[in-house]
Image (cartoon, rainbow, N blue to C red; front, top):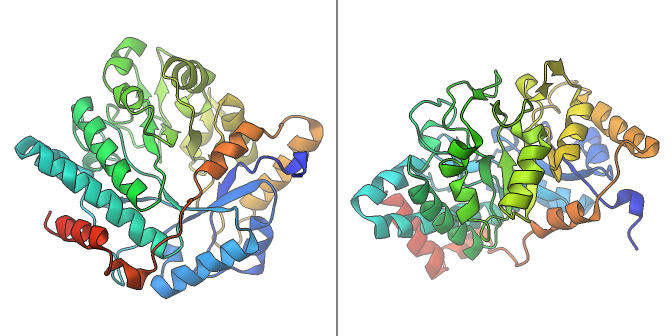
Length: 358
């Protein structure tokens, strides 16, 4: 029987380099940690990445190994045989010329993305982007499929189908929509002053239409001031009342990266990393993401782990079995093809050829 105190592992953290050191191993063994997110600094080549992920799984088989790998400018692994994936706007532009070809290409992109990552031991990628392309947001830009939510939903559904073909779940982001605001939430707190009705009619429509397709959702570090004074990722109104209750979403809710200072500003207060993670979970997130805090001699991750242990002891945080079940639902359920076997897979070969023609 699982110890009820260890029932929920809500933190997704990073590691500093291309292999685990003693500090990484200690942190990953902590019962509050449920996964690891890789960045380009963790990549040297396929053999190294495969060995790193095997070492992580040997430490704890249940850890979810994640990466931000969308295509275009957000693709962490680009060398040693990895296919260069197009920006999602490329698929939206193709849709305007040939919708059926665009749908086929989106499936192919998802299949190649997932098959190559899984061949190196990565379980999960934070994709697809469901933000609408209003032509305003530099941080979203060509990461968006299209301005029309119908096109976004159709192409995202196709990409998610391709991911599923290779045994990978998906994550729609950034709920309810980041494309309308100009400010970059990595360095500022964007404010969207539209009404709830306007947002639900446009930006949030893909989340409604894809309710049965999305395995996970990541909220935006954006304040929608006519709906709530708190950013969406800290808002029970957005996460519980609208996403869960109104739209009926039953999958995983990730926080966006809480390491960004702008992400920890809540109603004029700069929260500590631990308090930000606790606030995100309290608002309705299942998992809290802390990136780029293992570099150098940073002690942030240790402070967060200590903060969670204290919060659990003091009753300020209670592990949730439903959230843990959701986290585990993102782990692949089928064996991955080895890299050398991808070329012998007709489905992968066909998908890769289509992607390279884009």
